[in-house]
Length: 196
Image (cartoon, rainbow, N blue to C red):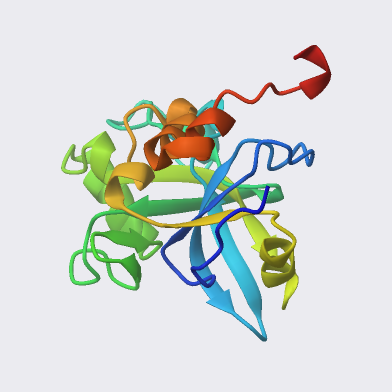
């Protein structure tokens, strides 16, 4: 079955793995594309791979204590590249978080971490406005387009509800079901087709 790929890769699109993708790094993932350049490559963050780590765990050693307000914020695995790096998505404008990069209206990527950390520590940043990730998904020049051309990704428009989903672990299935028809059926595709 051919997947619709009428959207070009660009910041703000969602990359949804087809159910038969066998790469363990990307099986049943949904990634938000944050940056895309034909000559430089692409950068994205996987939205639906939770980790058993908190923000306090990631910052332990940087701070004298990890008991500050917000240290219990959950972390997600943003991708297999540089898993020791911290990234974040948020709903704050560049005026509120300097150096933030717009992904699409209502979603920004990165920015001044001291400002973000202060928002978390003071309780000004509720969990549905800020997400943290370890690592990222990266593609070299032309690599992502090549994967899309081979039906390696379903490309959908991004939205805030997907980025800040209350239950990111069900996001992959929810997106496919929301498309209806044969895509809704794909949401129930067995992880190992031999077990069908």
